[in-house]
Image 1: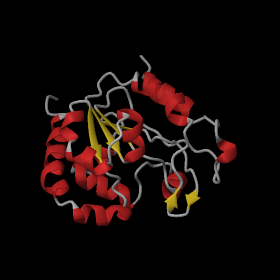
Image 2: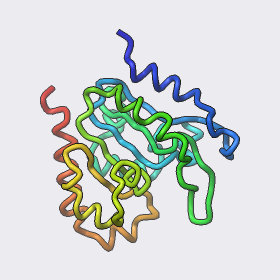
Image 3: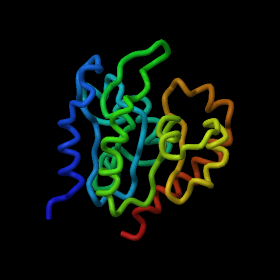
Amino acid sequence: MKDKTIALLQEVRQCRLCEPALPLGANPVVRGTQEARLMIIGQAPGTKVHHSSIPWNDASGERLRNWLQLPSDKFYDQSLVAIMPMGFCYPGKGKSGDLPPRKECAPTWHNAILNTLPARRLTLLIGQYAQQYYLQDKVTLTTRLQNYRQYLPEYFVLPHPSPRNNIWLKRHPWFEETLLPDLRQRVSSLWESD
């Protein structure tokens, strides 16, 4: 039987819905198979990811893999980890970093993709855009992270692992002391029964 997720993601990679607004053109970056137990929903690809078509293939990705304590071979194993950003293509440069993810992607594709992932046990919501879309609460990122357990077992909330967030991470040592050990335990347990 053909993997429904793979078939759908092939269709998503052909999407040109907002291409006229994209400075580098369309290159939807999304991956996974129906066996994936971990879904990572981030922001949008940066230029490096746009050019390589490999999600989290940058400094943010290195930090994220460290947070998860997942080596690259496991992180990029699509039968273990599915990756879907809020905006599938590089949105362009803004005044203080990349522009926000395009708003067309999530309502057009997210539900269909999530519905093809029957093995999914945990979804990481990385950064404010993913968290606002899925949680629809009106709290700050810091408050959300301090209360991360209330979103479990479905969602685990994380700040964006960008080097731009070094100051936030330094000001909130509880993130590394309390939240990361819990995250690592939950991620490692996803495949323990195998």
